[in-house]
Image 1 (cartoon, rainbow, N blue to C red):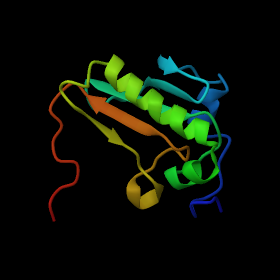
Image 2: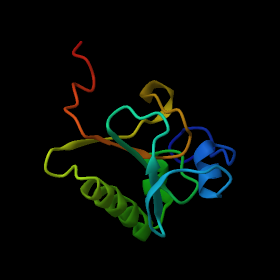
Image 3: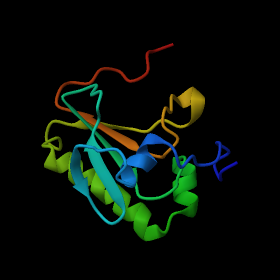
Image 4: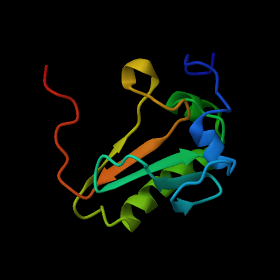
Length: 126
């Protein structure tokens, strides 16, 4: 098991393959610490994924095992992309899913940046 209690990192996941250049992406931005690219199935007018460069399953795994410079560099790229996409003034949403109950589909830590329209409630009231 990984640090977070999730399954071990799978080097065959789609984001690992994108990082290795085996699968193309529509790159938005890149730094030494992270890669940002457009989602192939966008859920908002702006839908960008930001992934750290490394083998991290979840936020807990990333924060526990990544060097501090990478953690800071990853979040800086998230903020830079949101600003470059023109989302700062109108607002935007950051979303990351962890594990089965959280809806994580790709076992590589990543953040979704959504914007470009009014976003409704994220979780329905119970």
